[in-house]
Length: 441
Image (cartoon, rainbow, N blue to C red; front, top):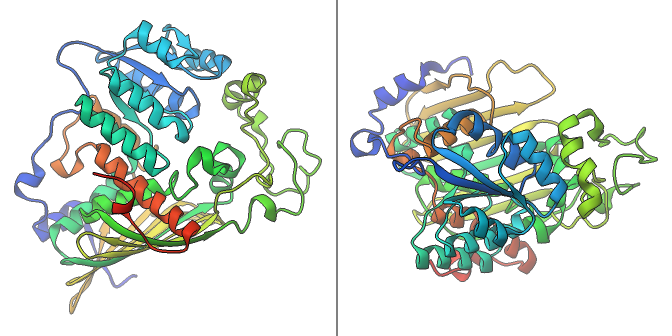
């Protein structure tokens, strides 16, 4: 790697002549209003709702937003969330009641994935604009219902793909836009979840396909959105294989929850939730209401999602992607490479690993019959590679970004989750699945 010529992101983009003209025009803020503060509500008051779409919005956007309601099926959790967010608005367990009484203009959906669609559709039918966490939905029937509701109501959906807004991912997008490697013919994308983060999905509701759609939908929708966006193309067909190799039934022992587990001294996956006061208050002290355990055993036999996945995706521009996702790795991060007519773009991203890593992201461009260049990316602030703050700032009008950084809409949400849905269906049916089989766009 030492023979690569180093160059900054700005220098590379300038030298390559990338992203000029209309593609660099600033865009208008997505959901800010010129008519005063928007009435804002959240459905789903778990960790994500509080820490990403609750407290930071009170701290940074109170001039454009007014919190008018919170909703969660667990009344205790909603009360804890209200205190943690720092608002005085009413909390509800009935979503329709919240809409009737609070009349929000903007709704954030941060519930269990399987219920996103019902809240999105109800809100759209009541004339409310919607932001939703990924995945937008977990199956093709839900996807069609959301798309139909948006069309008949002419309201706005933003799917909050924060990964797009990490500076490193913008850099990748702009190198591809520059044409430096020419037309992309294929891509290789491997994502690694470690035995801390990866295992956590098997402790929680995500372990059930009926709740999360599997990690091919819940987690991989992030990755599929990135690739759809990077390639500026739609997925056409998916062929996949997957299995449960480490968690669930593969354990030699098991319990229900980590607290009080007789195997805690010998289990490498033991998780002590009591060391996290916020999660203890938000989840453990509220579990008598709905029976939900945030510190469930990763070896429960009801686990029916995959921890080892691979897929081959064909795109509308003729490119293909070889994708893999593994949820029991000794380190966390990803590798992605784009093979083009004129060269190759390679990226290695490090999120967490048992060694000292000086650079979080390494990006190299190698030109056919030419030299290799290293493109440096400034170290970002915390929060999904710096994407969290940039996404919120774009939504609420604090920043302007190039047109290729526009907010992801329902179509982006559909294409990302449909890639995962097609992959899951392919595993089940042992055949390639065409996206056109799933929905009417």
